[in-house]
Length: 290
Image 1: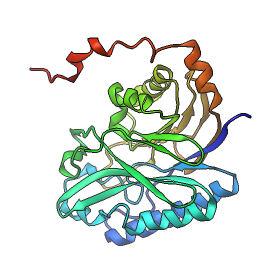
Image 2: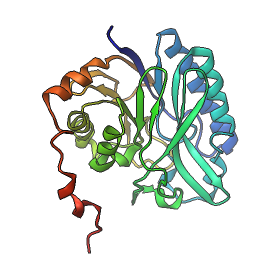
Image 3: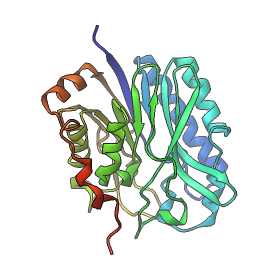
Image 4: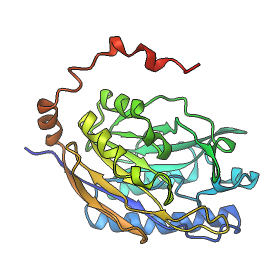
């Protein structure tokens, strides 16, 4: 019997003025996504992922302490608990990317993973943190400290990579070796320097590791920072690098695709990349450059 899973990605504009109170910003963004989650449920989506820090705009374009007010606990925060209720209601696995507080002053860019019965399975913390003009992430996030976990959900084994992580093949390989069948990358990336990489790197990860990738990006321009236009184009790609579904560049959208998980075995029996690895020769990869 074929293992086919219907999966979804939500790309959306920030729903609130960026100078509004943080609680109001979060409320409006969450309400917007709850509506889109209900639409996904009507379409039969079984696994759904939202964009990076989905409850807020991409606030890392400025270095202001007010955004620390957006943090929440995982799993015992209100957004994770709401998503657990929705997952249970819709029999849907939900990946929930939010700004996490471990303790006062210790914050992470994190995605919670919730199973289709509402059970919290764990979380991934973004490992690679950029620090450059318009992307002042080290001001807000500590580098992740949980490695590259893979989560056995009701429908598939899934892993999470977040935004800038996608430029690093090492973690993508670790997720494959951990058994991931689908890797989700919730992102906030703007047109310009890295746009040409958007449809190169992640299909390459899918091919090199023999799994599916779901890549999510925001849409719109967020004032007052105007660091660039978030160009959407969220997509699913299969283990051969074929695009299965792609979103628009500028619209709030639910991107849906059916993933045939049996293709993973077929591809890996053709391309024996895991068999032919030579980890005994890769020691230099774990060393920092002088």
